[in-house]
Image 1 (cartoon, rainbow, N blue to C red):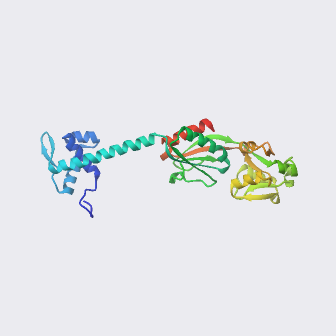
Image 2: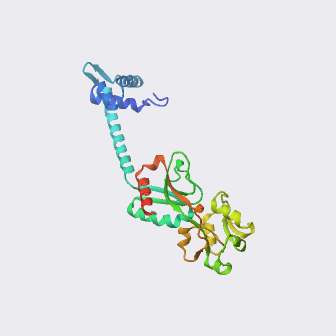
Image 3: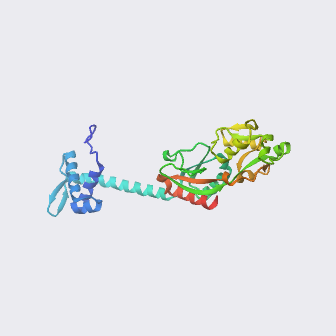
Length: 294
């Protein structure tokens, strides 16, 4: 019994007693629930001890509920029905594509992800989309997002399901007004005659940042930011030459590709989901949709 009231603390024992009363024998209840015959006896004995009431008359042919047992059976039957209905509702909810769906990706990819998410929502109007486009990696294990699109080396966080989506090709771009003023980037040796836009928190191990470090003088990097969105805005405003995906840069008619790009500058875009949510209907539907349409 609980310290604060006179109710049993273990629903398992109540459920066992209910099925004994419903089916009439220990063996039938044990088989239905999927537990050992001796466990059923322990549950009944423990429950009678807690309630300080005899719940069954023991007969050779089976167990017959006492008045207290019939009262318990009535309450337990209603509770069992409620649990069953709840399980069916939850199962139906999980089987349908609807509810909140949080997607996170790099801000640079937002112009391409957003139209796809809108189209996905047209197909599944019960879905409520939240797109978090930023460089911080949301923690899927804490439920900060359902699906993440991440670029670079394959994510290694435990309990995540990681699948490749596509290859991202990168090149140097500049606004046409910048090219009109400073000209094209002719060769690596010409880098000192230009102005460059670069991430303030760039990983020096990244191939394209390593190229800038090797070939571009520090004084030629004239605009820095810790936000990709700001770097894109700077390139679009003519601040200098900067890295963009070929998809992103090529979509803007005002930008000119300054280099052909290099194979070592390419990176993989990964779809990342947490194992606890990976099999839910809404996550499976989005993953399938992105693979078919990205």
